[in-house]
Image 1 (spheres, rainbow, N blue to C red):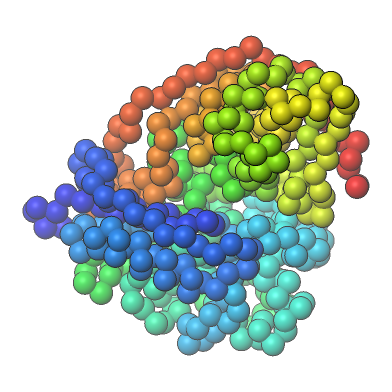
Image 2 (image 1 turned 45 degrees about the horizontal axis):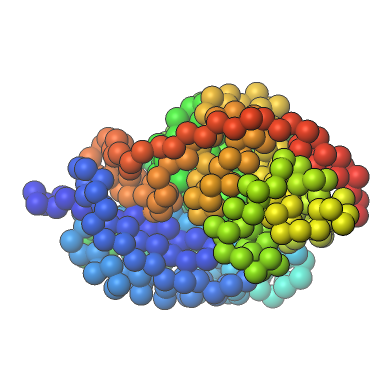
Length: 468
């Protein structure tokens, strides 16, 4: 690092877009930021991500003045490469549910849910990379026969940024690798036997090397270090400075509740995924498919803005006067109901109004996340603080209703690009040897009166609709 270099770059390649932040290495001050959109869908040509990244880098003024880069990205996506490093087929993303049956088959072939959870920390569902590999093996055997390596989105992007053409150079970190379904976060080793079952072949495959959280994975062609990177949730934990005992509830395209833990978990029920984090600890995580888009749907239905939606919800009362929403609009991952649809229950003349509809939509989305936090606690994960992040956390109603449903104080950090900021922190760590302690501003505390009866009614509806 040159004497005058004081900048680091953090990149977040999410489902919806790519964000690039340039921050001061010492103070963490935001210097520049840019973004570029990604295409919609659950199946995407990875070159669309690369084109978006190139545009975002150009728009931010380039990266030649930064001393290090880190790329973090959406978890689970399957980028299948042939021996020449060419993409074989569009990447199947985490939110593609066609591989639900493939996940069931793999769990069974390994010996059942408990055996799979013991092997890789998680029971496989449709979102895991292994499930998608099996789907390709079952449905596109010609494509499967060409697979020489499988990369995750962040693996592939930093490999591309390095300029390498050799798949043997592929790299990842244990945090992102733990979302594949064929990596054991406890031992830090790939389960090649599980991958072979997924591919239905035991031929030699290149697995990305595992880079330690604070190490450098690559250099760009101009010599800039590229840090290990990680998955989006692990990066978000870095971005908000989560410590053991903290649970981060993130409301994005998907909803997640994850905790930094010193102890590895495995949950035979499949509710909690036993991931690794980006510091050497673990990141038990519960994911719901339906989060911010539920609020988007509500604004469309009621023809209001997001702020107006919050105002309407707060004008209603807890429980929305008997209106109850099960928000499985796009199927669901937790609970594992990939073919489910949403259910609106309890409609009557009295609650057929904008206020109660707004409240029911927000409560329904947050009840799923309250269930997620409860699943972590049932597994023995320590929950001292809850940090609420994501674009929806800016809505006053979301914070207040979340505190009421979680039954505890909710902390809301200043709005920011938490994943990209976590990536920037990792880049700084890789070249200085110390995790930076940047201050990103005031944290708001919300402490609402608990409303356990709302959760009771939600859970009744959830259980009544099982098997629908």
